[in-house]
Amino acid sequence: MSVVQKKLGPYFDDRCFRSIAHELTVMGRLKVYGGSWNLLGVKDLPNPFSDHLLEATVNVTGFEPLESNIAPVVIPVENTTREVPLPTETIVAESSSRSVRKATLDLGLNQQLPKTHPLIKMFVATLKSVHGEESAAATNYIANVSRVLHFVHTHLVETNNPPKHWVDLVSTDVEVYERYMTLRENTGQTKSTTTNYMKNLRTLFEYVLKSYIYTDPTFPKGFDLCPCVHTVTKIKLLEHQLGLVYKRKTKQLPGELFSRKTKEAQALPQHTEVEASVKKIESNITECLTELETLFRNDGTVSVRSEKNGTAEEKKLSSLWRKTTSALMISILWTSKQRSGVVVNMTMGEWEARRHHLTSAIITVSDHKTGDKEPASLVIDEEMELSMMRYYHLRIRTGYKPVNFFVTNRGEKVTKIYDDLNKIYGANLSARIFRIMTETSGRSHDSATSSMVAKALQHSENTALKFYRLPATDEAMRRQRSLDAVTHTALVKSFVDKHFEDFYPLLPYSKFPSPDEALEKITTHDIYESYPQAVIDVDYVLGLRDRFDYHLQDQLAGILYDEVLAAGYTKTNISDHAITDVARSSKIHHFLVNPKYRKKMIKKVIAKFV
Image (cartoon, rainbow, N blue to C red):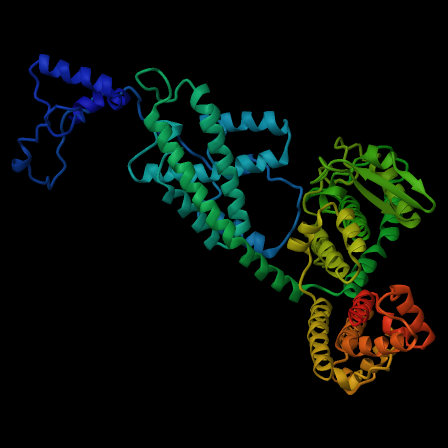
């Protein structure tokens, strides 16, 4: 049976074709044993030699296997990690990130499939049509998917099951994908990064099932020349299983996020410390610019690049350029609290098109992380504008092609702001730290201010609450005060309700105090001193007045009836106005002051005449 299956290839999965093949073997008087035809009414023959077969202790050579219609192709895989540029939108230089990268490199988890791999080529073409030719996000998606598929490819080769087609990579066991994610997490990768990998894989599977199985002419076909149902089902099964893994990982995100925010809150620097560090860096800007202008002279185009065998003057010029660039960039980030990509991607044209308002200059940057939603604005003062103008005049004389306002000494886009900052000034600062500090401090302000802060930082309030606002001491105290206010208020109100007649005696001719006087009776009592956070307002006092009038309304109705009766009113001439006039003339009009019980009181008096 194995010989028949190999000969038929994918057509064996088709029942009609399998039935025809069985009829041909019957016509040829061939007995096919050792497997099942899976056909109704067809008797399967067992292997007659199974009882006589022994396990071979030595390698036995035999006939070459029959050729298959799909020849196995082992795709050579090289380490192509460096060929795929990493996105440079969020530029953070942290020791933990470096250690994770080093660990994954040592384990070979960063190796990627070659760009010429059929599946990668189709994925790249699709992402180009979605994101454009040069997209950092698309580059990141491709790199993530390529790393995972390289690991799957390596696993299949090591298990003596080399992939014959790219479909084998997306129809294997889900445990291979899970093992890759587990290995990366064991090196220190966060659950958030893992979910990003899973999202990219789900995107790939979506494109495979909706497009690649139809557009790729090499995809396995069934008897009807349509995509093989069995193969497509295996892909769908793996996609579903990866979806379950993705859901499990997303459920683990909140716990990891809370732990990270707790650690960040403990290590978050004070505003005064950061301000002092930034001021120290800014103090070098003017001096460095002056030295640069001296070294540039009037020589036209000047190269600020230096080599190892360069002269001392070239090395000094290169060092001054790096110092000035780093200092200007971190100063702008501290003032604007924008993401680092805003300053990195600011162009010469955007600087030249800056607008002025009084003593400030506003630069609008279009290329940044959320640039598709709204441009980012950088507001700088006169002093910073003057420094940037001096830098601009030097920048145009370097002759470098990139349109970026800030460039490295080699004329390239700045990709390691914080590494350079740490090396040159020894300052461990970043735009993320600035943004976290601002959002965390903004919690103490009103909702309108905190909302405006989130909008200025180019994200929503939900994003600010989830990722930026850390659990600070003053915030914890504000929350505790709110809890104390609720508890103290409940205790004071409970005490007043229990000793109501001690505060407001239920005497028929007595008037309930005015709201201010009633409130003062409570706030001057010893109970209020015991629970000073209690909040007692006028609405609560008005409720006490209703209670006071409710308990006295029967007695007050009796007194008012006697007064009306003494005034000569009878059943025939009694009315609402008559009762009101009698109450006013008898100076007990306060009986009818409460609008909630006025009509009830009058009805009770009239009812006594019936």
